[in-house]
Amino acid sequence: MLNFTKINILLIYLTFFSISIFSTLNLQSKDNLIIDKKVNLGLDLQGGSYLLLEINSDSLIEEKIQSKVIPLKKLLKDNNLDYFDFKINKDTLSLKINDIEKFKLIFLSKKDNTVNPYIDNYRSFELDYKELSDNNIEIKFSKFGLLTINNSALKQSIEIVRRRIDDVGTKEPTILQRGEKRILVELPGLKDPDRIKKLLGKTAQLNFRLVSDNSEFGVDDLISENGEILKVSKRIVMSGENLIDAQPSIQNQKNEPTVSFTLDRLGAQKFGRTTTDNVGKRLAIVLDGKIISAPNINEAITSGNGMISGNFTFQEATDLALLLRSGALPTPLNIVEERTVGPDLGEDSIKSGIISLITGFLLVILFMFYKYKVFGLIANTALIANLLMLVGILTILEATLTLPGIAGIILTVGMAVDANVLIFERIREELKTEKSIIHAFDSGYTKAKITVLDANITTLIAAVILFAFGSGPVKGFAITLGIGIITTLFSAYFLARHLTSIIVLNNKKKEIRI
Image (cartoon, rainbow, N blue to C red; front, side):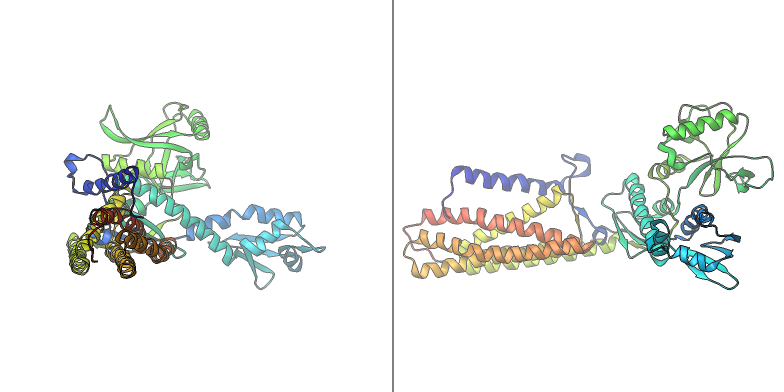
């Protein structure tokens, strides 16, 4: 194992230098970027904002229960069941029914030993009922139904939160699910979270509705931005789901910030039909239940493009466009916990981590040099190369380094030394019985190989499990440890072995002690 061809030597050092060169990118200044890659510091190192959000699915449950009214009435009608006093409450449906036993039979979906999939889905998976007095029935979502609604809303909310934060330009955010209703958001480097909080606090449910002059049924009284109360039709002409794109712009005539939007084909058809039939009327643009603009329809708009104005600042227009692009949240989000980590804490953490890393590194170097002399120097050289490659790979991946990540690097130092100690101790044993120095060193590397691989592979398996099932800082530790194990094996069995072979082959006729 001490023989290296010129191609092998070239590949070893080419791999080392091509990876290690990336570690130097962390030293470049912002004004003179060669390649825009570096290791990002996590929330615990550079400071930033921590938000814990919780979805409020009450309004969504109300909306979903209302969507069951027509299917339920159809079910009762198809089965010749008379009902009256049908009421829609917040999260329940209530009614009186003439034949409650027949209703139970239908709802249980058992008839002639067959199962009605439609009704069975109601009973077993989505809805449940409760029998009250005087033939009153109360229908609501089952526990499984509520869990399904919450899970769907949470997953959709996480995706929309991610889009909104990415659009702001925050680097390396951490967005994770916490429990059944909560979302963890970590924003390293963000010292003022107010803008993010405003963006995440808006559901951004946009719809277009005609302003009505009458006070008839089917009209809502909504307040516009200038304090004017308008009577707006309940019928939604078009919703934000039909938007393809939204961008901030400046209206040339008034030099006023606005939001220009583009509609999909269906939205363009709806918008064109409405503006054609209602020229001269006002069209209210409603965002989260509040009118942000109510312009007059001067002419038909059939191009699929439109503009929202509302006395915005340019920042407000930019944020509104961002909200419309990312889509509406299915439920409101409440901030249940908020923390801002100051830069002083981050600096202290960095200093503590660096001091511990340097202290451990120097002690290991001194011990190895004292214990193995020139071969200890080789092990130390391989250790430095190992750290350079580790930082280089983290830079390529633009990984986020946290305090647990630094702990993983420190553990990598110990693992790297451990590999060389196993090899050198095996070589010592071989030198006691082998007369040939070359054969003793070659045999030492060969026989220690299985032991070194076993030790590192078992640790790598643990790192993979931590990464798969852990979250946040635990994953950071697993990443640095896993990469460190791979660079350790490379430095021990390629770099250190090649340097060892140079010394052994040049001193094969002399006595070598290790």
